[in-house]
Image (cartoon, rainbow, N blue to C red; front, side, top):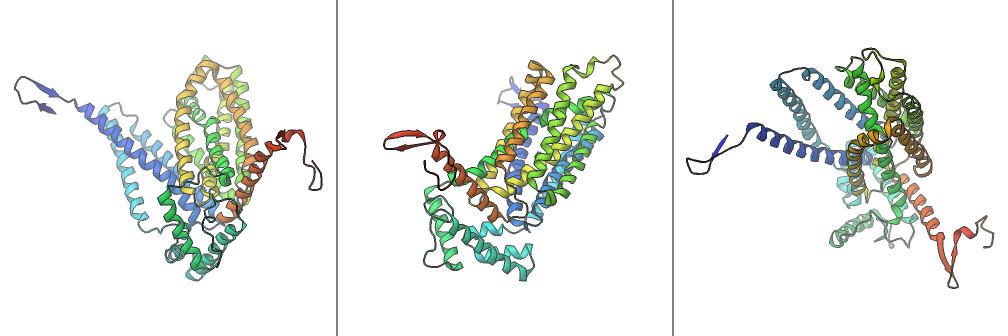
Length: 452
């Protein structure tokens, strides 16, 4: 492409590859924005729309389709990645993007036929639209019953809330004269008009502290327990024994099987139990890797690199065990729990923040872990991941509440009660009696009848 400046002597030549890479990176940037929005919207929407009896299994299916998309990408890459011709490689990328574009267009068309979340519509004071949305999920006769139960559960949540806490999304304008549905929906519309004018945000309310800690904590531990490093290193092992053409496909297929296992078990075992089982498997795998790598610096130590050694077999089994544990626990369960635990009034903000934090941490781990491996060695790196996994087990036991079989309103009540306990604990840490600071650690509360 030639761009003349108006004189015969000077010309500016723009190289074709530069235009290609500029378009490539701009396209990837826009594509990434779309992925980020979709990753935020999907768990929030599904969590609000799905019946509580099947919500766990269907929300976990999101991770199945994520892994299925990765596996499909690996297959396309394998089919077009063996060509030595550079043009053929570019055509392979084009083929992959054509497929992605076809799927995106299909998703866009299908989304036009999906209703807005009935819980979102209820919160915004649109009862007729909410009832119509419910009829999309339930049979018409059952939809009206579900609608009444939903409104009554929200009213009950309003009644049970602390009157002194003005941050509750139902406390700002309580229908004190009447608990009728008409007054309820009138108050909903009035609240949101006031919030738009004032720019009020409930994200940092103490009432929602427990759910925010649980959600953001799971996202953090999901990334810092070593998943990106394990996934990249197992591919290196499979490549070292001559399976470079199928290593990614093998890993993707194994992930898919493990994720399907979580989908079938989640409604029976529960979210918290699957998270703990996954962490136990990950911890066992990381401990094995730590021990093996203490005596084996890297794969290239073997004299015959074309043959797999006994230690390589142990490493391979341990890494598959880790991946299996991750895909049973942190992989699907994190996104399932994020779609359930946040109150409706902050769900959009909270899920969006969790998705952004997830992407940021994933990028940081991908960048920093190679430097960590070179600085302290693989054995110690896996040891650090193991310590994080130990803390993850403690965190899940302490902060994550079981939500199996509960409606979103029941989950909100459960986490709000936990937030109240946390707030009461913090309030006891430091208080005054007769202008004297007294530490809560200087006494214990044995029973309601005990005196301080």
